[in-house]
Image (spheres, helix red, strand yellow):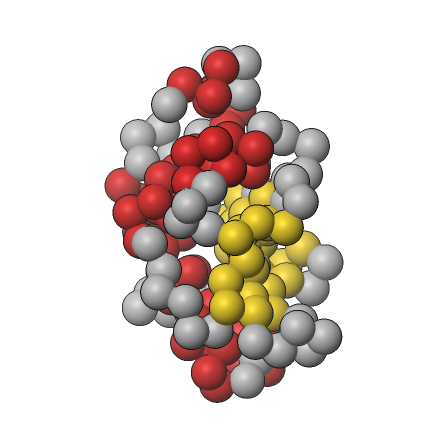
Length: 139
């Protein structure tokens, strides 16, 4: 796992319950790995938005992740709700993921993550600005 360089982000991760921290750290690593493997993605910034670990690149749309005490058995990866991202993910992976409206992919604590499909969603988000004009984001 890549080290967290931002102390505020590290503090948020450390405050999650252990069983959820591992799940969110896995999602974090998928974002980092996908960013390093995706053409056109250069500098990935890890920061907090709304107190949640967030990942930003110039070429893309912000990805956030979080766990809420109100839904203790779930955690989620969030995408900008004013984009076509989640609608596209639903078309592609309706049978693979659970969605929350047009803003999130939601995971139950015991879900097996479909890694390649989720990395595809992450890559689409990280390259959103160059794809947003294309039908189905060019997939």
